[in-house]
Amino acid sequence: MPNRLEVVSTTSSPDGTRAPIAGILAVSAAAVAFLLWLIYVHRAPQDFANRLMFLPALNALLNGLSAIALTVGFWFIRHRDIRRHKAAMITAFCFSSLFLVSYLVNHALHGDILFPGHGAARAVYLSILASHIILSIVALPIILITFYFSLSGRFQQHRRLARFTFPIWLYVSVTGVVVYAMLEAWRR
Image (cartoon, rainbow, N blue to C red):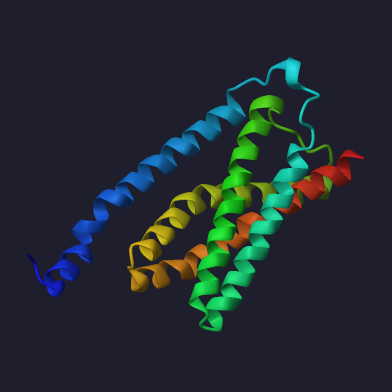
């Protein structure tokens, strides 16, 4: 039976993280490809045009709740309350996961919604939307890898990556709410 030092040294080696990270990157790439297909290629069926119209509001709510949980988790880790930090981050992950499911269903049923505003409002909306989309593509694998490091006990790697994950994830969550609010404000 290997001693404790041998187990630690093999589980913390870069080789021990390659396969899980490669899997996370592959799943993330497949998810992004599916989302791009769903948004830009798939045509929403007309039969569902007026069903489940609450989904965009639910998406914004879930994004907002994720942002709150992220902020609370950040506060807890700053105060060295690891147990509550972990609970808050898992809560944020759950809200973001529910958002993703709701987002997929919404786009499958309703397709993409175009911003009705013009001029400066349209330019602001499109710049926020573009940064939101680009960073959400980056956020998916980085969030999963950060969680992997935490759940596998690689706290030094987790800490290093979380410095980038937190602001990206928070930005994506907050701008998701902003995009929804702008669509609603200009649609009226």
